[in-house]
Image (cartoon, rainbow, N blue to C red; front, side):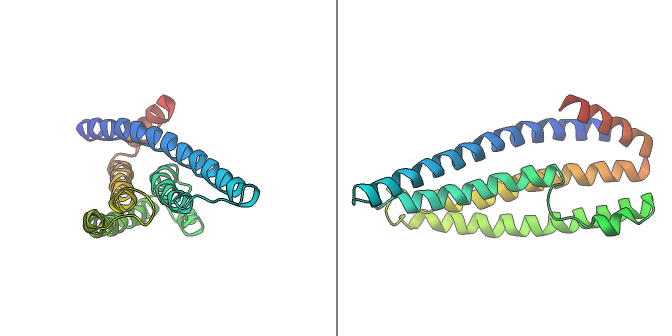
Length: 181
């Protein structure tokens, strides 16, 4: 299965780059959102003159921050997990259960991606309330987040598959990929 390890390594490198970019974008979104809110509070309560667009911009940035961080926490394993159940099972059964879960998550993500893409496309016909953009800019966060999450769960699925059939190769590839991070 050396060819599978090469595929996983390529996918891992791609996910590393995307996750790094998503972290930077999410941090930027939080910083801009915080700045916009602070400026809005100052103008509203000190100068008694508020901006009509600040709340909507902060909301859109929060949506983007959420969908940018979903793949990050999924890849790091910081999402809700079944550790109590998975930790008590034998290794092979644990790996099989993870494969099933990752497969089901992949199916749900594909459906969510498809539906959210259609939703974002419909947003191109709706203008934002107070910003000079269409709502598609906000709605696009969903298919972007779900699309990258599919890549993350594909990598996790393939790692489990290799672990199931070749545990020694899987351990070596995990050690190499974690050493590179």
